[in-house]
Image 1: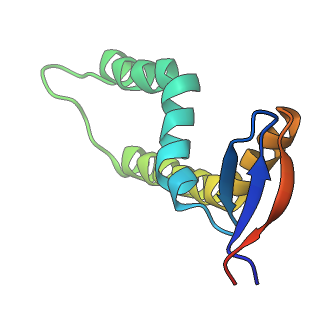
Image 2: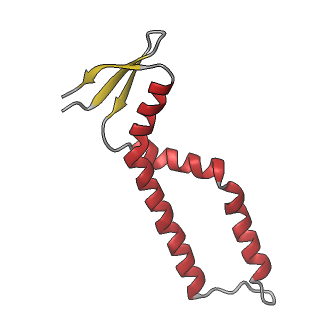
Image 3: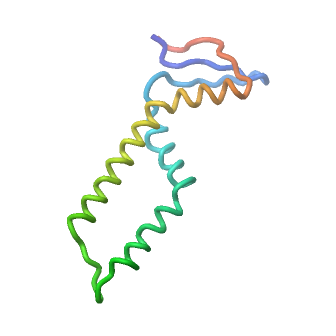
Length: 108
């Protein structure tokens, strides 16, 4: 079984793309996506919480807040897993759109 697919650009450059799970997309790709597209939401949520939930001089904590935080963490971990599973497929599709063609397989 091939561990990498080889793609050649119109200029002659060779790119190797792994087959299967992408750890780079799991750790870096999902973080990059989150920072690129959802950073305003992640900045606004804590500010909104502090503004609307403040009572007196202390910020209340409740099991609802902890449960909501846990739901967000689980959802983000699911998103990371999704990026890891599909990261290499997205890279192959991107290379093909840019004119690369598959020339072989590496490993075995």
